[in-house]
Length: 77
Image (cartoon, rainbow, N blue to C red; front, side):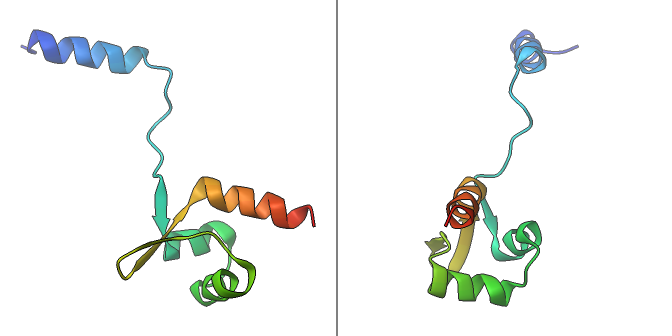
């Protein structure tokens, strides 16, 4: 038997119009896959073209939304 509070949570989740959770940030390998380039190309684009990234210590992460905006901006030039 399901606890009443859990049942209510399950029902709200089933009724929620929100799509499955998308990550806010992706790692370099995933960003390279999304953009269909190598990780080395991403490094070059960060330095030469200002590809937006987030540095977390020694890690670099990319916002999918920022990547989309950067692509649109570059395409309009």
